[in-house]
Image 1 (cartoon, rainbow, N blue to C red):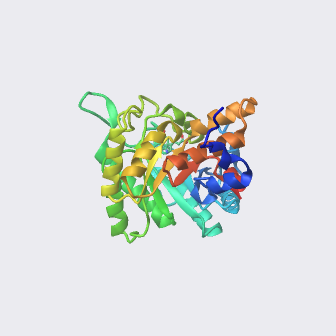
Image 2: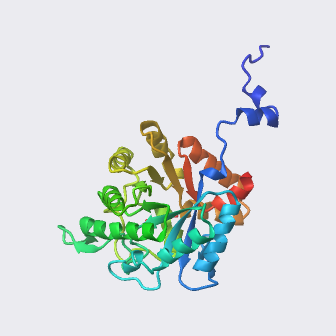
Image 3: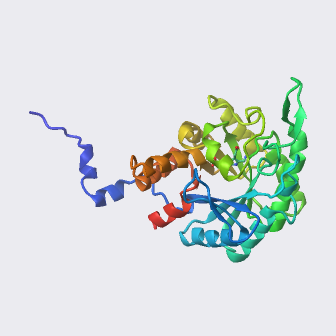
Length: 328
Ligand code: PBG
């Protein structure tokens, strides 16, 4: 009888050893909480496909932001749902629009909380696309890249004027990071960082978000601007371009089906990597947990740790508030 000389289990024997050997310590500092805001007061509409997440009005948003901060989470990312949508997403950059009101309210109540804004037009356009529509060379309606850039620039500036600490363009237009960087610098906002949704895939996992933000595309899909989920090399090229254009943080989205992209990005680039654990990733685990098929807390923490292990420093997740409390 020979005994194994190397025994991996020796260092797993008790909780102290396991604590000492743990390679990834997930912290509330790593988390960013997405919040949805719409007009009104006292609004708290639960999003059916995202239990525990709400469409909030500025007053209830402030309460929620305080709770997020209280859980030790340093940042929120805000999504606006305007009352009026139009072809050019005017409410995305209106100085008195819902998103600017929300930024001001949260910054006033929680000055130390990092307020990030999603810079995109899909929540604000009546057609639900991430930019303005034209007819392309194939005779199809499509998003006009360069016309959209002008509006994204206006949107980022409006958010910065309202007090946003960071802007996060999520539209996937070419050149938007550079355009926004130049405009912010020219307007005196050179200290406002850009977190670019750099490798954003055309994903089935955004379904619940589109219910929450009331932003599904009214025709076609987003495949002419978001990435094909088969493509890893292209994702690295997108990330490299955004860094060249001045992105401070680059994001991979969704997270769990794209851990390989996160890993490759972390190995190749020295900027902080963020990953967005999107609505569908959240909803799938929530639904399984509601059926008693999974333990929600364990599954959530396992996925968040895996995303960190793959190489992301920051994670946008609908569990941020709860996970902050779990981790403290
Ligand atoms: C806006 C945007 C989307 C998400 C974040 N920003 C929706 C989309 O591209 O359709 C999705 C986030 C989620 O599913 O949690 N462009």
